[in-house]
Length: 169
Ligand code: IMP
Image (cartoon, rainbow, N blue to C red):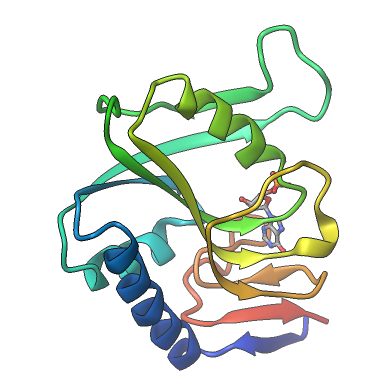
């Protein structure tokens, strides 16, 4: 398997600093509840949180989405929130928005808990692949339609710990 660097470690860390400044400014230094979508977003979210100087609470969710229509809803929750988000500024942190299915349903679920605000921050955005009407408020990098690995993103659970983002040739 040939691995080619798409975004270097330095580029990622620089962009995270920029995003952190932007987020602090947009939220007027108000407290944020970061909801980190496991497993992929963990690496990005922790680096982002460390660069935000205002108060950040961190919570985790683990979900998988169904492709078909399900009477029970379209999200399979493997780990739910551990705190109340009523009247909180919620920032969902995701690794990649691909078809948009996961975030489309997750957004609905979180909005039903009446947060003060709800925004999405994603490390990567693959606009070409979008099937659901969803867009992130903060995008670290727009990427072409390639399968990527590293910095949280996996291929068969492997490669998450690469400090850079790569694609497979
Ligand atoms: P969506 O629900 O189709 O937007 O898919 C989002 C999820 O698909 C992400 O959270 C990733 O886990 C996975 N995914 C999509 N594209 C890639 C990729 O290029 N590499 C690794 N995982 C991906």
